Length: 202
Image (tube, rainbow, N blue to C red; front, side, top):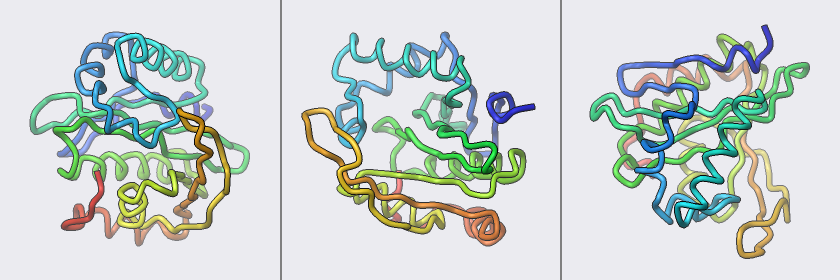
């Protein structure tokens, strides 16, 4: 079974439930996605309903084609959809992939949801997919995301300058991070203790 088949599954712990994106999720996602702050460092902007429809349909198509695994994050405490997170950039031959396209609605930031969702995805990557390397990248200007990645045990590797265009025409410098299979036991032990206090992570 290929990675694109293995990733389409439910992931769950006592804090969050991650489910593969499907068409009936549209309105629950819309309810939390219409917040300009989410898209400040994204390569897309969801500013109105038309933007949202394009964004959601694109995610749904990428997921259905097996190019990405798009997960809907549900906060188990409230029962509400909190945001989304994806597995992408599959390089199965080299046992490498990326966790990215991570966002949370306003009501769910700073509550540990990002931490517990990333723990689930990392467990899936290393323990089910048997990845050797899990990658992350973010905008050099996104101080909060960079701090959050350090707090989950990712190692900063460097900056790819002028990596891509952002909405409005700015050229983004992308900072890359990774966690390796050899580092996973130590990272898992730390993540299992819960989010760091005042971490700044989403």
